[in-house]
Length: 129
Image 1 (tube, rainbow, N blue to C red):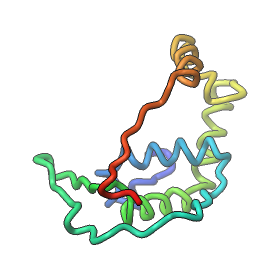
Image 2: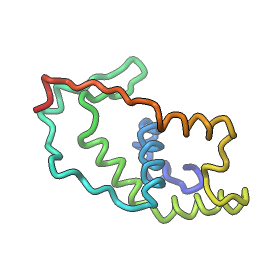
Image 3: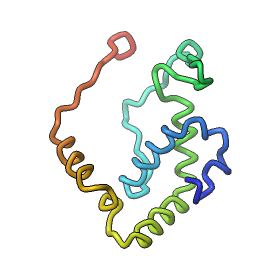
């Protein structure tokens, strides 16, 4: 991210580094194509009552999403050409056909196992309709 000066252009997103990295990974896996929102995407209720500040001054939003997600997503999309070029440079520098081949062998095996593992979730009936 430092190579493409992402945080120099968007310094306010430095505190949300993990969200940025997740969205960059997702964007890379979609071959830098924009996300198509599902038709049932709905707006969130009053966000003020869902905000909570942690002791380390990080803002946690319950439920997650909303304006912060859209801001980070827009920033990642604006930097897509630089991201694609950085990914290509890493692949050429290491002479690999895929970024996945840069991972250690045991990580690649655990990723294959994770695809066959069951996924668990929790549905909040108070917020869902």
